[in-house]
Every structure is written in C-alpha cells, then in structure tokens.
Image (cartoon, rainbow, N blue to C red; front, top):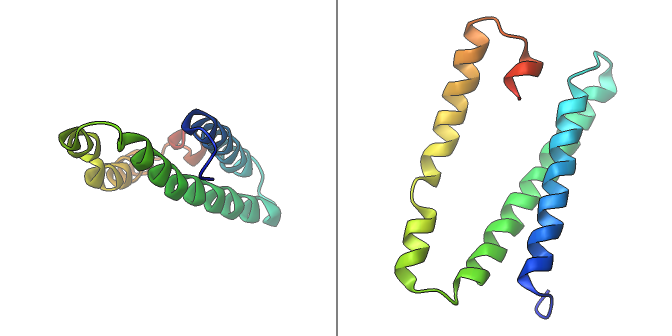
Length: 102
C-alpha cells in the first residue's frame, strides 16, 4: 500500500463502507438466521474499513501542520457514546429497529 495514492485508498474505503452499510441494512429485513450472519459480516467489514481508514487518513494528514491533526481528531471519542444514546433513545420510543439505523 505504500505506492498507492491516498485518493484511491480513500475511494476503496468509501466503497467498502457503503457495501457494509448496505449489508447491515438489508440484514434487518429478514427474520431468517442468515440475516444475523449478514449483519455480523457487515459489521466486520465496517470495522476493518474504520481501522484502515484511520491509518490512511493519518498518513494523508502528515503533509499538514501538526495542530491540524489535533483538530481533525477532536470529538471522535464522544461519537460512540452519542451513537449508543441515540439508539437507546429511539428504541425506548418503540421505533422499529430498521428505522433506527437510518
């Protein structure tokens, strides 16, 4: 991956992220057992995309001043917390879980 331009890496990660969202979203439309396994597969693909995306973006940002990287990463630690609160809040109002993912 050393000689591949960052734009191509980012494009591949965007496509893989979109595919994983599609897999996870479609897995909720069935009550069959394979829907659960599809959701797990989509989650694994998304996790890999997030890990690779962070490494690619940090490599991309090395050309910028160091204080820019600090601003880029600020607030990301709370995203998981607010995401969990959002899902819990939406499901407490008995909203269909398929719509919560939207």
